[in-house]
Length: 343
Image (cartoon, rainbow, N blue to C red; front, side, top):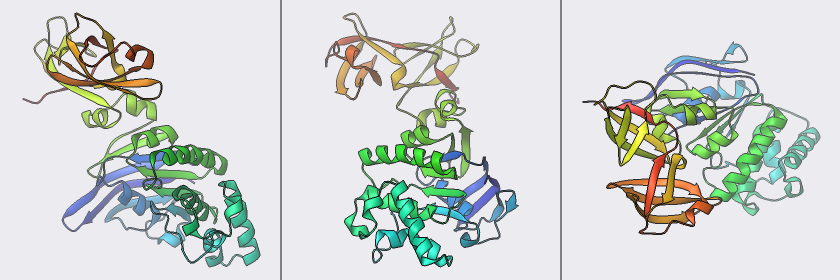
C-alpha cells in the first residue's frame, strides 16, 4: 500500500506546525522522517494515521483518499515511543487485543499472537506481564501488537527513543529485517541520524514544518541541498573564509577546493564532515591536538588550527601517532560543501 500526502497544513493555536508538506511512500518502502525536535515530524505521522486532522491537504492510502476517515478505519499499525502496553494484560493478550476488537475468534487471535511473538524473538515470553520485560522486549511486544491485524502500513513514532544506545542499535537492525520479512510500507519518525540513515530506503528531512530534502541516505549525506541539511547530518566542522585568486577557499587555516567556478573575493561558509579531515603528525604543522578519544576502528581528534576549533575522525592506526599538544598538519579530503555568506 502506497502513501501520498498532498500539501498538508496544521496549526495549533498561533503556531503553524506543518506548512505545506507533500510526500509519497512507495508500497513496501521504508522511509524515515528525520529532523530536530519540534520540527513537525510526529504531527505529519499522526495526520497519516488519522490521529490528527490536517487543517488543509489530502492523505491517500493505496490510491484512496482517507483524510475524512478516523484512525480505526484506515487500517494502519501505529507504534509509540513509550510502548503503551496494557499492564494488566499478559504479553500474548496485549498482542491479541486488536484482533479481539475486530471480533477474530479467540483461539485464532491467540494463535496469531503467539506466531508474531515468535517472529519478534519473544516466543517463550507470552505469559509474562509487561512489567517483567526489559524496555527492548516491551517495544518488540508493541511492534507485534501493531502487526497483529496485518496492516499494510506501519507508522513508528520514535519507537526506540526511550532505550539506551546499545539496545537501540540492536533493535533498529532487527526492525529492518522485520520490515523486509513483513513487507509493510513503513514510515519511521526519528531525530537519530544514524537510525534514519541505517534502516531507511529514503530519508525525508523535516524542519519548521517544511521538507528540507527528500532522498536516499547517500544523497542526504553526500549531496545536501541546503546548509541546514549539511550541518544537521553527521559530525561537522563549519568554517568561513574568502576565495583566493587560485579559486581556493581560505578558511579556518584550511585551503579548500570549491565546486564550480567562484569569483575571487567571494565570502563563503564551508561544511566539512569530521571523517573528511586528514590529520597527520607534523612538527611544522599549524594544527595542535587538544584531545584524542578512541572509538571503534577510528578515533575522534579535537584540535585547533589557526585559532579555529575542528574535530576529525581518523583511523585508529593513524591516531596512535597523535598526542595532546603535538603539532599536526590538517587537510581536507575532497571538495567542500559551501554556501554564500549573506552581506
